Length: 117
Length: 107
Image (tube, rainbow over all chains, first blue to last red):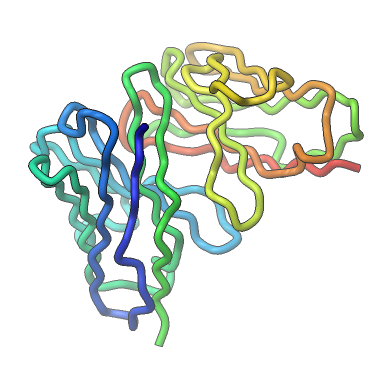
């Protein structure tokens, strides 16, 4: 069974940093690109970042480019999102996701990031 | 980036009605299109993937169609539990853009 378990969400001050993690199991992790998606309170879904299966290619949304860094450890089946220079507008639930071969999407339950003084 | 235009933004319908939500992609995405249902305080729930494949366990009242740039989610025989917000997402390329969402209210 595919499982994605996010962690690392917390309350942080504006300008601060936070590192999110996602532990993956139940599939051949290194075969799949992984993504982060977020949802601010009362807002729609926003794609944040992605990384290729081997980690050589990374992608970022315009709102986080230059501040967030995505990475993965295929030996530990983990995905990370290093978030720097956090802003109030980064407050959101962050989800770890990937698209299976058939096109089916898999999501974790999310981890909450709150940016506030 | 591929823009996803979803309509309507909200719809109100009665139990037993049929509702259609549309999603238009800014360029050809083949059938790399998913539909999600989200209820308040919950994570998005996948309904349809690859434009028309119904996820196992999801009610057959939900169906998806389309390819290329135009896609449709149809909910038949509306039930009270269908009250939710529905999103489309293109998974053809990064960024995996979402539609703006459609809020469905059951009268």
